[in-house]
Length: 248
Picture 1 (tube, rainbow, N blue to C red):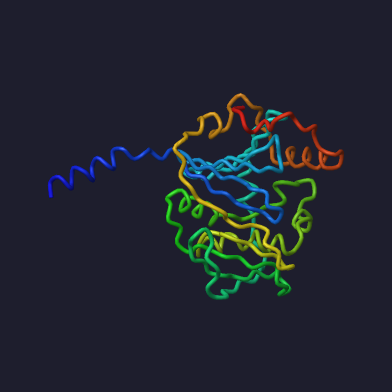
Picture 2 (picture 1 turned 90 degrees about the vertical axis):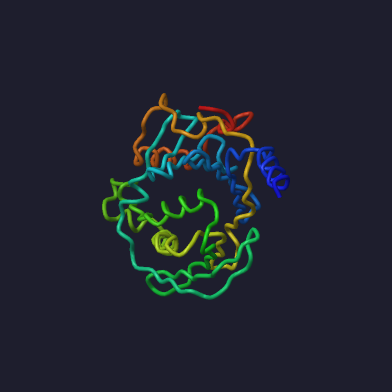
C-alpha cells in the first residue's frame, strides 16, 4: 500500500503545471475567437481585428478595450454594467445538444413584441473556476448605450436593434442559470459555439494579460466615434502581422 501511495505522489509531481486556460469560440464563418484565462484575468482575441483586444479583470469585474494601433486603453465597464434592462422574453425549452463534451439546456429569447430573437444553449454548471468567475461577471451585465453615445441622450437606446438589445439585456438573467455555450439566430444559423476548452502549459506574458500603463486612457464615447469613423473610411491598413500577437 505504501508503495502505491509513493507511485501516486510521484505521478502528480511529474504532471506539467497548468499555466492558463484557453477557450475557443467559433462563429458562423468558422473564425475562431480565443479567450485566455490566467491569474484572474481574461484576454479575448478575435481574427476580425489586428489591432484591438479585450481584457477582463474577473476579480474586480472591470472590462477594458486595448487598441494597439492608437495605443489607447479604454475602461468600458460603465457601458456594460450601468444600464437599465428593457423588456424581453426568456423561456426554457428543455435539454440541448452536447457541446464540447458537456450537456446543455436550451432557452429562447424574444424581443418586447414577442418575436423570437435567438436560441441560447447553456452549460448550467461550468466546471472550471475561471468559467465560474466569468459567469459571475456576466450576471452583472446591464447595457447602457447612452454612456457609449451620450451625444444621442435617451435616443441611444434606439440605435441598437430590438433583438440585439433583448439578447444583451437577457444575458444577465441567463448567466444566473449557466454559461452560454452556443447561440442560434432567427435564421437558424449557429453564430457562436464553444469549440474547445483546454489547459495550456505555456504561461502568457503578463504584459499581454494586464492593461498597458503607458497607453493613453480613452473614454468609451471617443472610442465609439473612432470606430465609426474607421468603418466609414474603410478601416486601417493591415499590418504584416497582427499587432495583438505581441506585447503592447
